[in-house]
Length: 208
Image 1: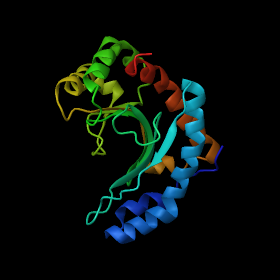
Image 2 (image 1 turned 90 degrees about the horizontal axis):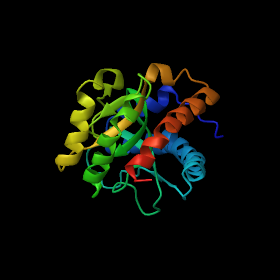
Image 3 (image 1 turned 180 degrees about the horizontal axis):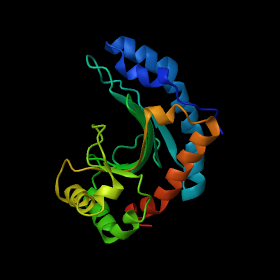
Image 4 (image 1 turned 135 degrees about the vertical axis):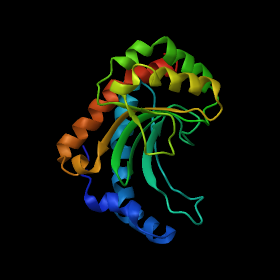
């Protein structure tokens, strides 16, 4: 288990002005933690799901002006990329830590994945109340599952199926104030518990 603890300094990286300055701080403070989490949780997913998973730490290489507002490590069973596949993520915005399962607009089979999730919507509804859902990986905003069960969850899944830019993210958002108080073992346990809840959903998405 990597000795990872999130600090206020990690979250403040995303408030630093300037692309170069923010990237320097990101590389110094945050990316080494994503690398460690990548090694640890790619082994976890490989073991739990029975196929090799690979970590993908965000590089933000295409940015030339605007500094990244968030960063992450993603996990998928493909070495060369993850965006076209359902994938898991651990990441930071300046306001919170996110631990999610995501299907984004670049997934070519997302209409099929959405149909599978709609057919098993009750399984999503049984997840803990403190889980969140979102329809946009570029936004820090999300809706609690407790609120979303009535209408929003189905809306998001239908949009994922029918709209080219439709996306679906589900997992936990941990506010910065809470995330920075977690011990190394508490953080690891929370992350693993979240992913344990999401594994059956992943298997439905990929048709297992």
